[in-house]
Length: 410
Image (cartoon, rainbow, N blue to C red; front, side):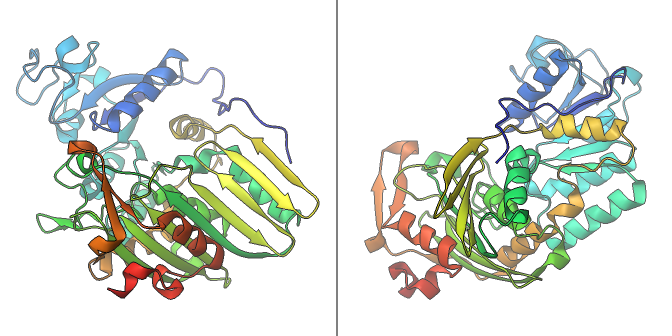
């Protein structure tokens, strides 16, 4: 295995002018994007020129210095004087050239991904789009078509695709360290509270106002586990997937799934099993498992740690990763360079998203199999023995129902 990388930096050509970046969606997870943009700005990689959101940062009574639909400035509006616009349309139509971005970062609700990313690319901008890519496979197809029509770059925010650990895993497999690969799985046992499901009108919904949302464990919080497992299995494009079987459940009083198993069969016949829940007794690191005839590999993708286990070896190393916005900047400046997570390379994940979207409503897990812990907004359900069941899904490539999990018989 390669030596660990303490830090990872994507090389941006020396002398390249820092592109202008606008952040669309500044609240919630958008705050993480804002902090990362500021870090890159401090290094001279990008310039933050505009913020876009119906609600500005700080006070709702931000002073206006522009006309209707124009930019608003000041610490109350943007924290530090960055122009703020209520909509992407307002930004794109602004007459001030200094606010015009080269790149937009979209951290907005799932149903807005296609229209906003399409508008940005048709305006000549490159895009970093939060995952999941879109609300349906048809929307993903439409978004790919816009990228090809405009020739613009569209990077999707599966951060693990920038991890050097993925390259290390792929090299171990290619070198035959675990023999022939017999299956790929992923285990995600996380905790989400009542407050999490109340954080936004679309949270935990399958549809909202007649539009697909598909906000469940498979497609949002633990989407990284699915996308990363599929990539390691050699499935990135839609055509790389031969079939998807989903087995969806919920312990919370929501529309979407919070405890689910998924089996994906790749075009090469490899079976992938994903055991995922937001109803565990405690949050544990999500892992991708690669099973082979002579051993297995564990990838803790949140921390970029790789463990190789065979009859003769038990080694663990940590790697760095490239920031996806920095990778997008480098790709803009380097002809022929590929994005770490091109929108086209999320087609396999979108096949899973589509299977979840079109599946029957998740089954309600019976009260006999649930313990509620905590109080108020911190309350959360714990499904009996859920961690062990998720592990079995990832190891055997079978669904909860096929394994005989007790709540599936209700």
